[in-house]
Length: 276
Ligand SMILES: Nc1ncnc2c1ncn2[C@@H]1O[C@H](COP(=O)(O)OP(=O)(O)OP(=O)(O)O)[C@@H](O)[C@H]1O
Ligand SMILES: Cc1ncc(CO)c(N)n1
Image (cartoon, rainbow, N blue to C red; front, top):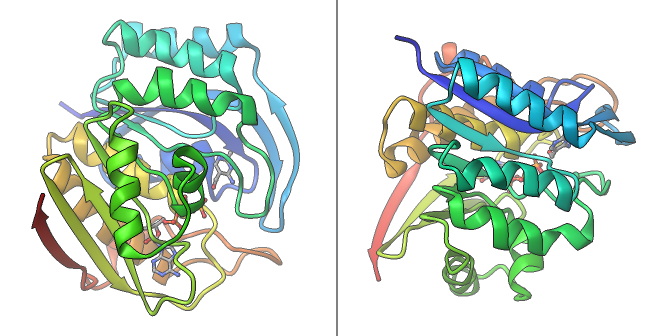
């Protein structure tokens, strides 16, 4: 039977991030995707022109409709907008209804738009993170959550340790925002081992939707019962191919190419492991 994955996230009218990226990713990876929309964004490659939250009733009803009938083998969250919508999502998690939960702690879009109210950050870390199998912050999000700053490997290892204290099973600290790096390293930490996934940086401005697509790919592989390490490694291959072949659509940061994995060569991902 086909595996299913649910995304709880915002809609990106531009088609590159949010719900649209997640559903494309699920489809590409052979998982049946469902969605619960937290907010509509009027968005394109140059920015976010408007944010229109879905009512709390609408969010709760969507999640209920999906879970009562179709169910979910894994769940991914993206833009959650505010504390109320996080609390609704967390209430399903508390009842054990959001298995293999991947939380992408989306806060601010690449173009600077606020996708999570500032007051809601602690709600996310305290109410949702403890139910997550994996959280996937980028460097600025990790800095905001931990209050630490810097991007050296040593500091990022310490950040990963701090982030794990919120109660998720594992942390994937993404390196896409490493300044001036020729090599980009993502760190996966589960309390026992650090896994370093390194790639050569791709020189491109077309990175719209990278974070959403990566987290959705992990969720798709978890739905197919891969281990966390294997799911993250396979998702990293998928996102790397998608960035390499990103579309030059619009005037700004174009969207990654979700179907690139069908024809692209397998990228070289260096994986190193360090025991704690
Ligand atoms: N220029 C690049 N070359 C290679 N890999 C990249 C590049 N930019 C981002 N990545 C990879 O893409 C994935 C997403 O990382 P990133 O840190 O950009 O997430 P994000 O900031 O949450 O994404 P978004 O831009 O969607 O908000 C990571 O695996 C990261 O290493
Ligand atoms: C709806 C939405 N979710 C997430 C992101 C982050 O990439 C975005 N730009 N838009």
